Image 1: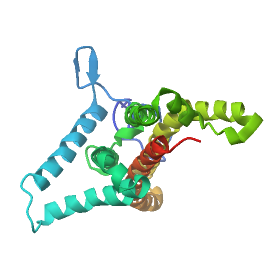
Image 2: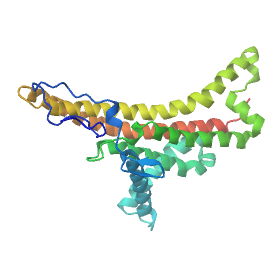
Image 3: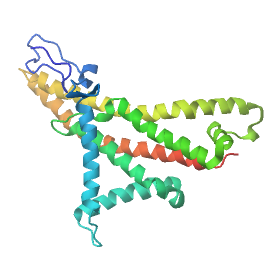
Image 4: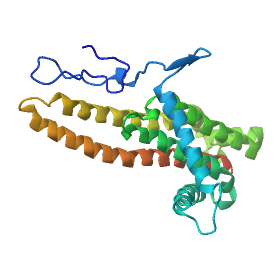
Length: 271
């Protein structure tokens, strides 16, 4: 039986060690999906569905929690307030301060929970796929932050002052100033959004591949003496799943922390 290259695990279910077939290692084919349908020339596939469901989950959760807020919060409202307050006080206020940061709390809360839910799909049965492991999704999120950062920079400093801020203008640097400004321009305008997107993408991509390797190995080794090794591989699946839970939350946190740092730089006075 040939494996369908568009399935999540993309391995032959009747292939085991000692059966004369090689280990069906995961690869790029594990990240390809058949379109569910096509609308306006756009193919709608599983990662897009999971991203849409992530939006529904986040909006639905906060709507249910705050639609009828109570002075003495119930469990759902208490959890939502704790999550909101974590981002507001633990990230935004710590980076931007209360006065400057308050206006950015909604977008940072939205980004944090949206990215977190998209990451969590990796360990949810049936879904079993982290949406940010498709590079287009982190790029889109990084572009949102990029547009906010550039807009805030020029709004705060004006056209000339904005370019000085982006270029790291500091007249005290003397003759090396042109070199520093060139490096800063390249770093801020090109490298910064690239690394912002790739950091999230690479972690989710690598984590999914590791889970696939040990999940497939658990099944592949389930034959003869290989059963003992299959048990070890399955334990690794459990440990990696627990580790992924930590990484999924951490990457959402790092993404908005960097976003706040970029905005903080945009608000800072140039020399």
